Length: 357
Ligand code: NAD
Figure 1 (spheres, rainbow, N blue to C red):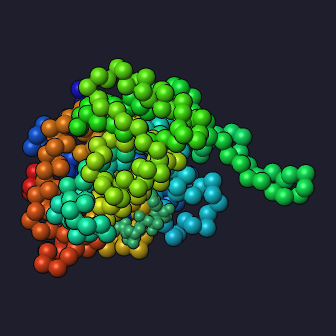
Figure 2 (tube, rainbow, N blue to C red; figure 1 turned 135 degrees about the horizontal axis):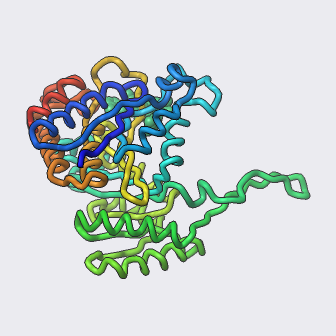
Figure 3 (cartoon, helix red, strand yellow; figure 1 turned 90 degrees about the horizontal axis):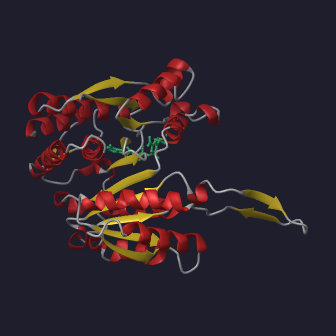
C-alpha cells in the first residue's frame, strides 16, 4: 500500500536540504519502486508568515494523516523577537507533543572518510556507529511539581521533579531492544541508580523488559561513567538507552565525536513507530539561500525513515551506501571540506547521491 510522507521543509536551509532529500526519494521511486506519496506542508517561521501560526491546523492534520514526517529545520533571525507562543520552535515542539513522539533516536556515525573532522584521535572514533535512544516526553523536563519558591527565611529555592512511570520506562526500553535487534543486539542502559530512586526503578524495569528479548545483551552503566566512556572508548557501544535529561547531554556529546553537524540525522518515534525525521542541526540562517549547506544529514534522515517507520531496509541501505560512495569520491560541502577534496554545493551533493543511487 502506498505510504504517505508529510514533507515540512520549514525555514532557512530547511528549504534547500529538504529539496535534495525529496530528489533522493523521487529517485528511489523511479529506480527501485519505492511506493510513497509526498505532501508538502508549512511549519515554523515560514508558516507563521503565511498563516499567523508556526503550526497551522492543516499541517498538524497532514502530519497526523501521514505514515512519517520529514522535517528540515525551523527558526531564524527574522522571527526571534516574536512572542514565544508563536516562535518557529513552537511548531516543532507542537508536532512532537501532539504526535506523542516519545522516543528520540540519535545515531552518532563517523564516516571513516571524515575521521579528521573529529577532535578525538582517528583511531578512537573511526568507524564509530552508536545509536542513542533518549526518552523524549517524560522525566525531569516534564515532572511536577516544578518552580522557584521563597522559603520562610526569604531565600529562594528552585526545584524540579524527576519522575518516570513503569509504562514510560518499558516502552522506551522496548524501542531500544527493537532497534538493537536490527543492529548488533547490544543495549547499554544508562542511569544513576546508585543515587536516584527513580532510575533504580528505571534499571529494574529495563531489566524486566529485556526478558522478552533473549537475543539482546543488556548492560547497565551509571551516567557519569557513560560520559567518560563515550570520550575514552566510544566504539564499545551499540545502542544506549536513557532518560530525557541524560540523553539530552549524552547525545550531544556523542554527536560531537563525529565533528560534523551537517552529517547527523535523527528520528522521533511514537508507540507505533510512526516518526518525524530531521537533521540534528538547525536552520543555519547564516548560510541560508546560498546553496552551500550540507544536505547529507537530511538525506540520511530519509534512510532512517525507511528503516524505522516504512520497514524498507533495502532502500535505507541504498541511501547509506550512496552517501558513502560520494564521500569516497572526495565530494565535500564546505562544512566537511578539507584540502585535496572537491568542494560542492548543496544541489551538487544531492545530484551526486542520486548518481550514486
Ligand atoms: P544551527 O545548527 O542552525 O547552526 C550552527 C552552525 O552550524 C552554523 O554555523 C551553521 O551555518 C552550521 N550548520 C548547521 N547545519 C549545517 C549544514 N547542514 N551544513 C553546513 N553548515 C551547517 O544552530 P544555531 O545557529 O544555533 O540556530 C539557528 C536557528 O536554528 C535558530 O533559530 C534555532 O532556534 C534553530 N534551530 C532549529 C532546530 C530544529 O529545527 N530542529 C535545531 C537547532 C536550532
